[in-house]
Image (cartoon, rainbow, N blue to C red):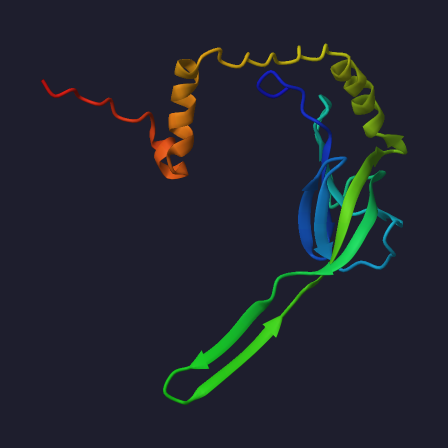
Length: 175
């Protein structure tokens, strides 16, 4: 428990030379991996497994018998990066662009020695769904007289910026 709450199981995996902190249900974008959308991949380079109230397991270099299972969502390309090389006083300028090929993965499970980490969390979720639904809101009745409807009509005539600024200033009577 961290600060009174139970922390979900998470893992730190390495793929494409980068490290990612993942939990079941997360979606991450990694460098391009082989596999068609909908296919399941196993990321076996797990550096750390923690959370879920158990002890944190740190690998040297990887945690033994730990696998992160992920589903390929799509293959995409990242944002364009402009690379501009410049050397002063010699008129050297080179402008090139780059878009990284990415694979979007949805983390489905973290396996430790073949045991799934998702099932304990899935058992806790139905208890949260059994909470009673909030009561429906009641609508206000329409005003009986035009005097009751007047304040609402006044705010509708104001432009949106003026209505956000607050109520209209009170008129002073000249006596």
